[in-house]
Structures are given as C-alpha cells and as structure tokens.
View 1 (cartoon, rainbow, N blue to C red):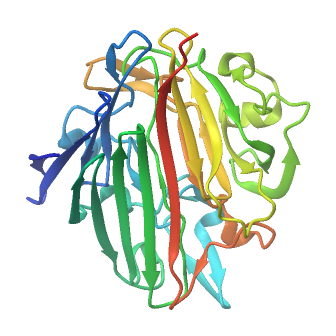
View 2 (view 1 turned 90 degrees about the vertical axis):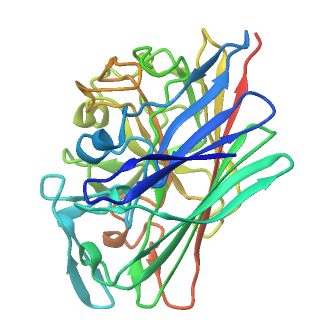
Length: 356
C-alpha cells in the first residue's frame, strides 16, 4: 500500500492519497478529502488495464468543480423534500441546495471534509484504510455529534468493500453512500448507454417532477425501469415514460428485493457489464435501496484526468442507500439513529470479466 501527499486544500489542510492494489492488477486510489475514490483500475478480457471511474485532475478541481465524483455523501445522501424533516416533534430546517430541496448533506457535506485515516490495513490478500470524521452537533443543522467511520478494503477476490459505521449522542438521521461514476469502457471513453444493467428490484420509489418521492412504491413491470433481466441502458433512456422524462434519463431509487426492510443481509443489488471490454461490475449491499443514475447532469464543463470533457451519459452511479426523503415517509425504511445504536452498512463493488 502506498501513501503520498495529494495536495493542500484552500485553507492549508494537507490531503493524502492511498493506493490499494491486489494480485490481479486491480488498483484503487482514495484521497482523504471527501473519502473520494479518484481511480479504480481493472483489466478487460484481453488484460488491458484502464481506469473505470470519472474524476477530476487535481484537488483544487475537487474543491471547486466536483459534482460528487467518487465521494462519500452525508449526513443524508440523496434528497430531502423542502429541506426539512421532523424528528421527535421538532422540525429541522436544512440547506436548500437543490432548488427547494436538500441534497447529499447540504452546502458543506461529508464530501467536502478532510477525513482522518485512523487505521491502515496491509495484510496478506487485503489492503485498506479506515477514515474517520466527527460531525459536530448542528453541522448543516443536523442534530447530534455524529461519529463516523468509513473503511475501504480491497482483496484478492477483486472486491472493493465499503464498511460504514456511525454513532450519535442525540437522535438524528443518517444515510451514507458512495457516489462513484462508473464507465467500464474506461474514464473519458464516452457514453455508457451500451452498458448492460441488471437490478435486483421489482419496485421503485415513484417521484414527482422535482425527483422527490411521492411515497408510492410502484412496480417496474411493464415500464422502461424494468432491469430485472439484463438490459442495455440505451433501450429505455429515451423513453417518454414520465419517470424517465423527469430526470432526463435514469435517476431513481430501486427497492431491493428483500423479505422486509428489517432484513440487512448482504445481497447482490446490481450487475453491470460492458460488451466490448467484457468488464463486469457486481454491487452487493446490506442496504434497502439503490439509486441508479446515468450522469444526466454532466454538461461538458468538467474534464477528467484524460482531459476529455464529461458530457451527459458519460458515467453511471449505483448508490446503495436508505430511500430518498425517508424522514418524511413513515412507510419507508427509517433513517433514524438514536444514542446507544450503531449505524452499520456494507457495500461491495466486485470486478470481473465476461469471457464470452
């Protein structure tokens, strides 16, 4: 495992980059700013190694131009309607940083914090780091001191594992995820619409035009949202189906197939493959939902390490999560964390190759 200085933030804080690697040419780079995954390299069916994630060339760009490339989003990933929620009879007003709504933890969320590495893991067959951030009571107007850890480990089974853990001293809400944009053909290679996606979900959370859940959990059957069998993104992304029109593509929370919301077993949530390279990505999680997002708001104004512009559809995100706006929907999984409880979730990104 390698560690080096990545850069210094505008306020003079040093940021470090850690490189994790395994025996199969898989390499993952993580920086302490925002827990950002800046690079994931993996071979294709011919052995050619490419970086598979979108990112920015330097720390200054991550500070000023990022739209959540590769980062940890929190305290609450995704949207909260009208930028407010009520907990134990008290209403908390949050920053409205997405129109009238709250998005990904607010103006200065977890994606914009420098995290402390509290543990380095370098053992036979596995490398990793544990990152820590103590979010103070009242930060972005969330209640409670939230003591948060994220551990990245890479093993020789080509699994990048993300373990989230948090505790609080006051009742609060928590929803943490990773917001990596994937392109299995390689960073800067263009559109992902020929990627083939399969999602382990019979239902999704229906939204209004502002992409806020209505509270309805609707079936995917008979809609272009049905990825229960492998389907090319291109086959549905230009649909006139209302939910696709609202988000200019796919940007929806899928309800993973579980016996109940209380089931937190590790299940396969998604499989993505790219037919030319043969690269394959599996997503496993203990979470109840996964947000499938096709980079609809990439607008050509940001450039990656390849110095190529990122345009609409150049990457996809698979954000494992509690449902968006859960604090305002009693029928959704509860995001409430109370003193004495431990928020604990796991997500695994597993890399492989389809030989056919």
